[in-house]
Length: 318
Ligand SMILES: [Fe+2]
Picture (tube, rainbow, N blue to C red):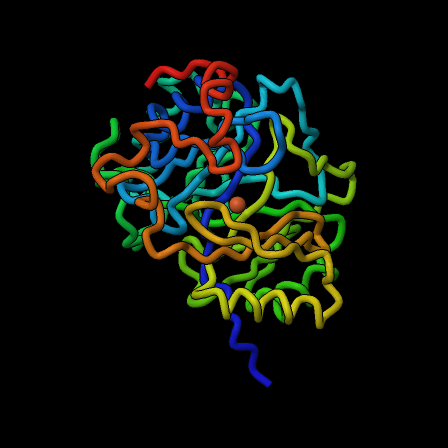
């Protein structure tokens, strides 16, 4: 029987970064993404910033979100069993521009290629691994008012790279649980795609059996999870039901994240994936479209502690 619960594409990727200002400047100034939302992590009792970066409206698959962890003092350890690299799409013709721009900002840039796609690899100031991949035909709308002209700007996510000790344990999860197709192999890489496999619909697995297990907690310097878009709550229920029927019972209940509803699953690769349904108003639930990201939005769970929270969080200049 066909599985009607289709995973469509990336929704957002969430990273544990370092200092709040460092993270904000890196994404909004160097990468020229829009600050779509400034809020805090909805879980826990000690507040941690949650920043969303993306295009003008913070549309699905343009979103990179971060928890700047330095204030907490908690550090992560990179390794296998975790998402290792975030891959963002830029126009193919813009790779030269970006190489110069990143070098001009003091970043060490390395040219790489995977599955015939050219990439510029570099690190977030806190050590997270990024790359910009040159894509000729990505029609997603970039941020229209950044430091980088929109014709050269980042279009959104391209792929995630998951570090694994072996490939085969992920195959059943990806093909039967996550509606993906295994399409390509290249040395230690295996590619899975969703839908037509365009940018924002790609999961690459990278074999790194020599590495220790990465940490899974919130800690500076690691990717925390990748969220994927599903159509509606019915489809989300079916994703969860189907995963549990396959035996992947480490699947969370539905969580209200303010701008979307989420379920989380610890994949056999070790990385955490999320199946997400955007709320109808999306990022405009609490701010008008032309004011996105202009004011700190106190999460509902902290609403009764607003003053305390604002005094506690690191000051941020923007
Ligand atoms: Fe998420």
